Image (cartoon, rainbow, N blue to C red; front, side, top):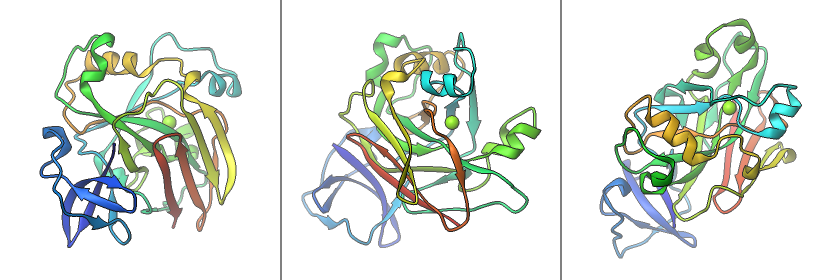
Length: 250
Ligand code: MG
């Protein structure tokens, strides 16, 4: 099932995608999925990030092909960092190019959204705690990342975390094609089978550090082929079985 979080008549709603229509949910999907019988046309709704994050946790290096590209050793444990929730934007939202930044990069990633509050999860119990999967663009001011010791400034500008368009509840995250297109040209082309740390291990690792809440986001890192964007560019992150997240740089 593809869940969509959207604005309709200025109200925040959740729904399930049915062809070119949305069937609204009676409540947030974290509280169980109950559908209304009426339908809303998909055309014209404003997409919101399909999450309700109190925090966004991202992984520094998690694809074997990306590690080879950077000439880096395979890490012994995940390197994690946070983005603030104020960085979130939805499908078709604008990525704002900050004044003073000289290199603005896209990083196409598979993200998981939490279903339940959890702490100290074992990898084998992982699937009980995940509501679904979506596309995420870990937008990065690379010049500031190189300059600063902490990555917070480079990763945290408003609009630096596009997420969407849908939250797919039934896909298996272990073997999906992931691609990024800049102005229609293929730039990243990999497979989640290249993960260094699998989603169940990432959830377990993060949950040993912090309590996770329904709607929190864990992003799984980016593959080979990261590159830069300019004002006016169109950036698309496509993941097999989930959809294509489209944003424009302003
Ligand atoms: Mg990243």
